[in-house]
Length: 499
Image (cartoon, rainbow, N blue to C red; front, side, top):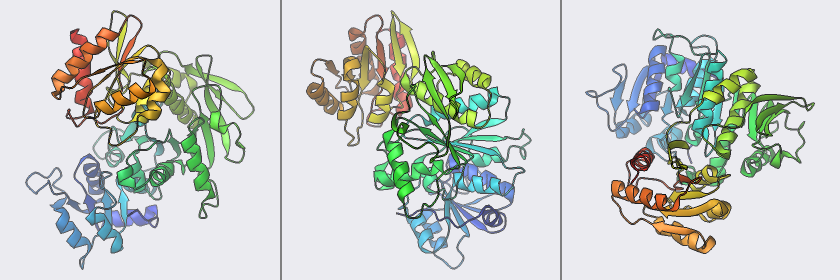
């Protein structure tokens, strides 16, 4: 598998970006952000993208070529000095493989922006707060950004959500106020191409099997995710065993002679430290913990002294997943010196983004929750965990993922299940085997509107006062819908129609 090489210092990277040819792989959102930054640096920019021509180019400061032409350039007599890839490009892409074979450095958009910032290309360096994990990244990123803003700091969400980091670094050049804090949602793809990225604070929320076709194995995926912990301060979940297994494995690696981080915070959704209970806290540099005690998010220091940060009640999205995201964001904020009052204000006013546990309708005592973003079993488990009297709406493209562990975990909270999509029968059969006492309605329609209308009608027949109807599909949406957004939007639409 092709991977980035750790050989560019900030000064070296900036020298290349200012004076030598740079090839950008991809003209999507990430690629355009890189081009924006390179343009401010005065770089000689070429973009490789098969769908962009000189006539429809998004940025006239760059030249555009096809991927085939880019491969020939990389392997020719005058190769670029650097390739900056968009995160969606697979490591086995011919362009990236060729660059690696011919000794052309390949890095990603996060790495490029971080190196330029560390080199002082756009004034004093910013504070980088980086968040990754299989699930919960977007909500935690948004919560943490809100905490910094409530604290009066110039913060913006970048990376997978919000502003491309290259654009955030150049706000002053565009006549806008400077951004001092970059709260970055970083994917495993972006971290794969970020060999030297070292945020001020890095958080790994959780780990479960995902994107294995891209990474080649779960171990590769976990290793790339764990790069976010090479930080000044690592923020670690106390109750996520896969995260701790990965940390322990990396610490045992022959090349790892020192801790990944300088110091650490831990967070938990209960008063217990779970996986961390038997760990030598001094050995991992643990300073403070953020836990939930009697309905409050509480910070405890090494001496046991406690400080209430915010209420754990009424957090959006509702349920343990939302509390976990809030605890993680609070731990990151406190490690960066954000006041407790700012954390409380931000969480009180925070509303989750669409399709991530949003309450879309409430009537006759029935709450309808859209978690269409729960596109794998791990995410669905997080959405359903801690709930009760649930009518679960599930189904779509499982892509080979097993729902057995998910159903075992949440079966006692289920009142009924309504399934749709190409793998609906897989879920129905698993329910029949594991939880035969729970009613299951199968919707066979493949028309997106008709199917969702029937789903909502069936769910309403099962739901009573005090129940929740939760769309947490545990599966992708493209078998029937244009994306998870359309799936969630139609769920909300038909719930509100009252059919």
